[in-house]
Length: 330
Image 1 (cartoon, one colour):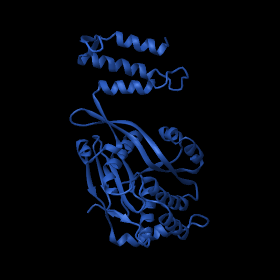
Image 2 (cartoon, rainbow, N blue to C red; image 1 turned 60 degrees about the vertical axis):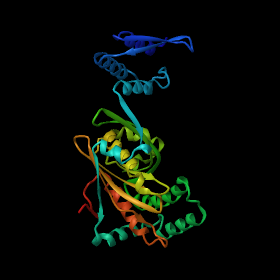
Image 3 (cartoon, rainbow, N blue to C red; image 1 turned 135 degrees about the vertical axis):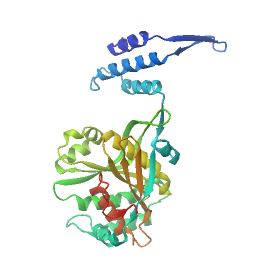
Image 4 (cartoon, one colour; image 1 turned 90 degrees about the horizontal axis):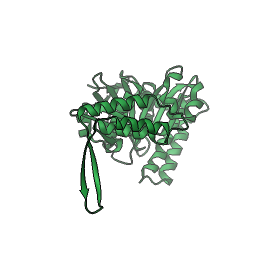
């Protein structure tokens, strides 16, 4: 028996377990159930934590999946209900103490936003090329699936990334970024959430670009090794009805704030044609506030493209700030 298995066995057998059994005549077996008092549960949780803290995740002899199984056992003992991001609805947010509110574009700032979106950087993806690529996608890509929508989203993100990268700072796109299980307290009990963010757009010093893109999960799980400012934005893709994806985006942002110990993170929900910009603010008591803009459309003749590109740049430049340049809550 492996040392890890022997240690787990000692933990379990050392508990004051309450056993009962019943006979199942169909299968001709006895079914045993273990009943734990509150004291037993606390003792097991303490032992599990001690055991978990001594494990080396880099140990080649570590049984595959052991860490995940230990976490599953811990969650069951703590009576933690787990939900994936995709199943979160407005009622879930209310139960977590996450309130919602509107963001309004300051009308006098609209031209400034559009100018920001149209700003060019020599040698990078031009606004004319961006328009041509969008028209190409509209003419030749089926938008009836989320995969089709992402092609359009990619074009706008690449345009913004290309004009923001010259210099000592780069902006990088990380598709399908997984967020691990994150526990929230609510009344009553606790619950956990996990899922995949469709795009994480990360801004950091240029010398760390290769390190980030080579292994995004490891790099962002250890931000202390990146010397200099690093920020990220949450992007959720939705084929249609982008407003319906706001709860999913909000819980992803709340989870990211908790994992990265952030007070604020900005994000976007989009179909490629429609765009909603939001800001999540994490309160000290664990609750939160999500503020979201109206839906902005690219428009049939791309009359809304400059506005969307400008708001994207602003969101990425101010990813962890609740100071608004172009929006107001009043």
